[in-house]
Length: 107
Image: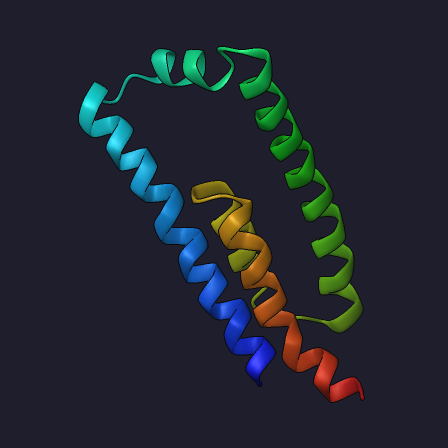
């Protein structure tokens, strides 16, 4: 139960922190998608992190899809919504939170 609560806490933190920075950007620059992408891919270092994160998201979708079928998870679609609206920082711990009861039931 402690591990499951930790996953939930991390999912909430993974929701709040990214949106804090996104809202800070929009507050400073308005909704400027061109500037956002320019800054996201503006340097080789930033591009490294952006590409790494995008590839990690693809891996997460494949892995979570397989695990969802394996355990017949009911609410795993919420993780895809979290991934598309927030990011991996929220979607991954949310997935682990949702999967935990299925793991416990198998023991």
